[in-house]
Amino acid sequence: MANKIAQRENSLLSAYVDKQQKEHEALVNSWAKTIETDPIVGGSKFKANVDYANQVVNKFGGEDFKKLLNESGYGNHPELFKVFAKIGEAMKNDEFIQGASNAPKKERSLEDIFYPSMSK
Image: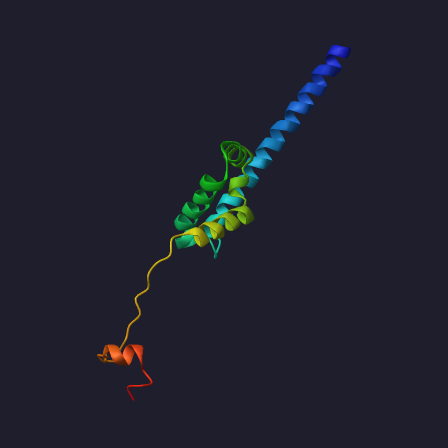
């Protein structure tokens, strides 16, 4: 009798665990789709933001942290992804922006440069 009860409980528990795993997998997959279609980090900006997020995780996260993100599926959580992408974008190298000048350059003498008030 006890053996039958144990088998029944085991099968119920196995069914429950399988159901939970499937629901978690569906949730993680929906997170990934949400990120890809997000107007802030998704669409045409998705690949760049994935690179930014990966740079943050690689720079600051240890192997255990990376393993946790992958195994739990939280690496696909939209809010966590957005935070990592924003940090990665803030960390990127600065770019030089050349300003345009339409004014003609006036040659100035050294006296004008060093003593502007005296040359007038």
